[in-house]
Image 1 (cartoon, rainbow, N blue to C red):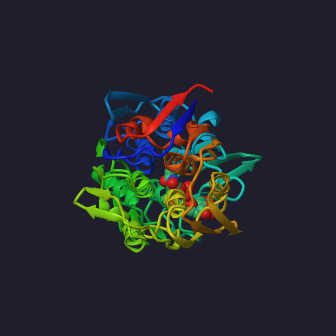
Image 2 (cartoon, rainbow, N blue to C red):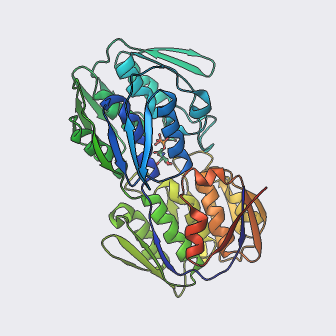
Image 3 (spheres, helix red, strand yellow):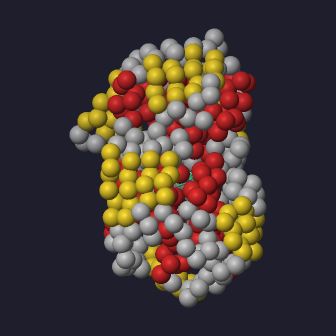
Length: 421
Ligand code: UD1
């Protein structure tokens, strides 16, 4: 399937933010630890989440949709130790299943996780492996395959040499079932990590410090099941906010999220001159007089999210002046700006981590292929503000993270259709 977009339609109206992809993906593997029924609310119905659900089913468990966005997981006796390659290949967060399998089954076999190709080579998992080893796991690597074994995991003192969201979440989750105390240092502090810790604690875990650089986990023997409401997707909210700002064509209300999770974006909006108004759980973007360029550097939370860098780059093509975008988290994430250049943007790549965008420039519709999830959504924004028609192929990549995006954009007035290849 492809998206066919006719650009420059005025956008106005309301859009509700879905549950967070990056939170949802970490909740499903927890079922391996709780071994009890879990009911999850506000689940985004997106491809990566479907893959996480399929993973549980492939491991022998039951996942049932109760109604829209509500799913129930029923734990059955754990049958397999292998994470299916066809699923592991599809999303990076599949690595979240490794720790719980190791902690409860004593072993796990898996291939190198897939996902967006935005890091050096395959995105590394060394932080996970080093940490599991510190907790007593034996690791056998053969080609692209890993076999981890551990009779019993023991608590450990782990300093992450790099700040990693998923490594923090994975070790925090796994350590719940290790013997004794685990201290994780130099942790990521994303709101999704806090949500995961709150959920695990509500199931009986003993986790302290989530949302700070040091997390302490005291091992326990059992977790009970429970209910969890996924927090709203701050990245989706920020993406819609930048679409509204870049289109600059009408009033757009983005609702059902927590604006406190996007402070770094509002700080940039203040400098750029975006006309926005925050409320408790929404932001209203109105037409701005003039957008001016502003440099941005991606950073771990609460800094400016790397996942918002691509929509921000599109926004900067519409602002007056030069902006330096510095991508510090993922090595290949700026390569997509080459596609914006093909659409008419004036972008100079200084090195793989830095581009200079000179604006404003009109953009023109082209035939495009989505390289990955966040670059894909940025191309949709570019197409929506471009003159003429754009087609975007490989939309699976976009639908990994955004639920019914075409429908929701049409409700705002966009001309976007789904067509066969
Ligand atoms: C998560 C998010 C992703 C976001 C990223 C950074 C999920 C499912 N995905 O990805 O949307 O872009 O955080 O905010 O939550 N690294 C290593 N070794 C490792 C692990 C990571 O070197 O073992 C490096 C990565 O290559 C990258 C950096 O650490 O340069 C941060 O990556 P990380 O925070 O782990 O990203 P993810 O958790 O995969």
